[in-house]
Image (cartoon, rainbow, N blue to C red; front, side):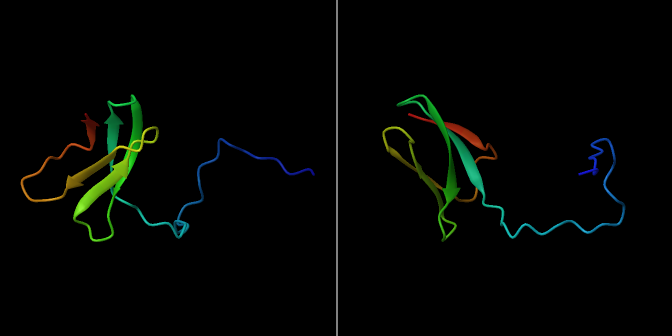
Amino acid sequence: MNERLDVTSDPEPNQPPQETGRRVRPFLGIKFACCSYYARIYQNKDGTHYVGNCPKCAKQVRIKIGHGGSNNRFFTAY
């Protein structure tokens, strides 16, 4: 019980980053105007659309992924 945590220390140099086993999933941030809720929607497994639902009323939003689209990551669904 005599161990102490020094939160001011920098990480040890030359230490490899730890693998978390989690993959990064592309998402869009959506403000659902129907219920004034925010949620993330994620790519479908085919990588052709972002698909999700309003967390309150379950209204679905589906956004096609294609060339000439937007670089924005946050949208409002009406």
